[in-house]
Image (cartoon, rainbow, N blue to C red; front, side, top):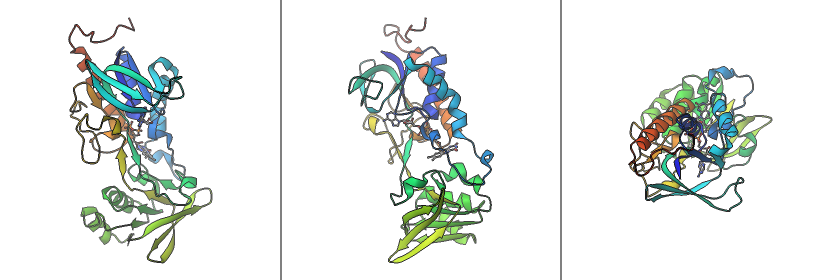
Length: 318
Ligand SMILES: Cc1cc2nc3c(=O)[nH]c(=O)nc-3n(C[C@H](O)[C@H](O)[C@H](O)COP(=O)(O)OP(=O)(O)OC[C@H]3O[C@@H](n4cnc5c(N)ncnc54)[C@H](O)[C@@H]3O)c2cc1C
């Protein structure tokens, strides 16, 4: 039985794993990949890259450590987490490092750090330009667009916030809002008053066009088709938390984000969560790293308090 299983190998999960290893816990990281969303690196012509916090550089040291410590990680997909006496059972699909089609692991505590997944436009050309002019995080990349032209697609809080942030930096922002959505909220009201913002309500994206980089977006509304040129196109259609494996087990927000307290505890004893999958504020690498560290320390303290008859912390390292 493991002391701790960490699910997810993004900034939150990697940091938690490195902390847990330092605390000499018998720990296993199970993840579909190492690096998580930091593996998406935005490439653009003629921009000052130092203007953003580079997620990949920030977590690379942890990625290398976990890659080296192969006993402490499995590349696999977790399908479900179940309660069992004294802890939890983690059921996986069975990844390329397994001979068995499905594997089951037992653990005293869990940190869930599975992040979110973004919604795509699902139009022609999108896959060709992913992260080459077609971006997914204005919160991360807006500072790169000083005096540039940008497009934001979406009509929810996330898109309006993105358009608002870009409008303070970029030369021009076109907001493609497929529906009225949240256009009446405070961001919507400010965007309507900004003289460098054009809101195209009721239009939807049809195709992304470009050369090496995305250069334009075809949009349409009731037969009116337009080609909009821009230095970058931001897809801000919302994020879905990867929390399905604990549905019904822990308390969540309506959108599936896992509710945690200030010590990363969920509503279930021994089950902790960290990073974008939780209801904390802001999706950023540095925040996820801090949350992962907190979750590991919190899980460690929890393990120290387990009854003596269930060995609180395994002695595999001694
Ligand atoms: C395109 C893009 C670019 C960004 N650029 C920046 C940036 O430059 N700077 C910045 O600060 N922030 C950036 N962000 C935000 C930042 O990447 C996230 O806030 C951060 O990665 C969140 O870390 P996390 O560990 O919570 O989740 P993630 O990074 O999403 O990691 C989740 C991990 O869980 C694994 N996982 C998911 N489901 C399962 C499962 N069922 N079983 C096993 N494993 C699973 C995934 O494979 C992944 O390893 C960007 C976001 C996006 C979408």
